[in-house]
Image 1 (cartoon, one colour):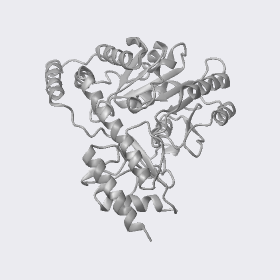
Image 2 (image 1 turned 30 degrees about the horizontal axis):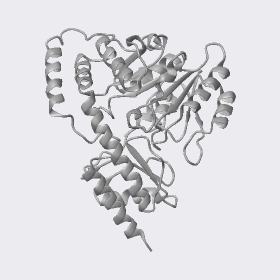
Image 3 (image 1 turned 90 degrees about the horizontal axis):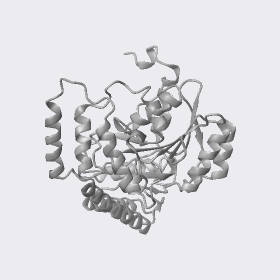
Image 4 (image 1 turned 135 degrees about the vertical axis):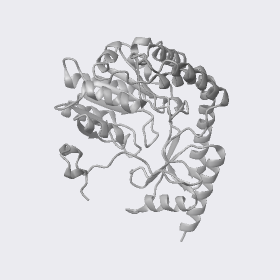
Length: 374
């Protein structure tokens, strides 16, 4: 049977694999950074009400510009970050991945390049490839932070059109401070000259950080974008709703490439219902942050090397040998716990679950550690 490489697909897609984590039926699944808490019943009922109202008008196209939803997102950002965001400076799409795709469609593309600092969110490179944008991989230090001087040199040498900064960084959980972002932004503008370069701060896990959002940095910086998602903090991974905040001119630019009526009426109605319950959902975030910090403490007590985390997951190791991390991943799976083999040598990543799930994970780590002792 012939495969896709026998089709006339683009050369840069040949031999590649689609993005995705294993979906296995195990007792404790902590590998995809989902929020483990189901939506509260009051919110479920409100979603039903809003969707029922939207269903009465499904014979018509939805609001193409999603103005009510963008206004709600702007209000949410303004309230939680302390920086006023206007509706015209917010854009929403089907998950933050579509937001990033639209940015690369508008600011990347054939003959242009995007730069990220690896290890980081692998979809940045995949979306770049999918939009015909060249990809450049900048380095991180041994503690997974970005060295400003080295990064500035890489930007000056390669002159990327788009720069991605993931904070908190996936898969390491590492946050980026404001001074680093400003230095990279200034370097990107100098390197490109003229209209400069677009710098995208991916804050998919921003609500879980110990640090304040980097969103206020967009003030006065036309080429700086902050992307967010409702999948994590809002516990709405199944909704597929992402958004960005930026200068209104950036929003105008992405509308040149967005598909017509890209956000369904049902999606908009569901997201608006979730925004009505922000305080309750952010209460779950506080619980997850406390559990995240507990996992860091407990894993270190077990002798693991743990990367500082500002996200709803923890990277841990260090497992020796070419197959050391995968062997531990397999052993944890045999104890009924699924974590992520994230491709970082010697490390694994565990999503923060409920207290009971986290206890099961820690018990599995203890058992595997005991089994592997000489």
